[in-house]
Image (cartoon, rainbow, N blue to C red; front, side, top):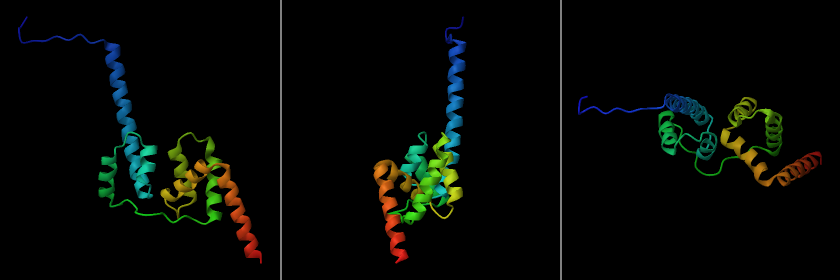
Length: 151
């Protein structure tokens, strides 16, 4: 044997599992990068992106924002009318059987193309945060506005 040679013994099954894990990770990362591009085109917030794409770093989001020329929206987003919010919540609840939240947001954008992901995300999270009280509040606002319109 040559004195400058090192020999390693590696368990083949462990090696194959590690390679499969790396390939799976790379595939998921690639998918999330595609999703990142789509979300930025539809004006998603950085927080929403981080929630839906756990493998994407803030540096990658920033880099992609620069590439696509889509800066972070500053300040409060303009929220749609109460009627639109209810329609969004109804559409969101209809898509509940879909386990992939990203696909549910794609469906929402298809149904509400005039609104940004940031707006849609905000509507849905308001209801998640406030629960039934938000729905009651929206319902009461609708009643009030429709009563006022009838007068």
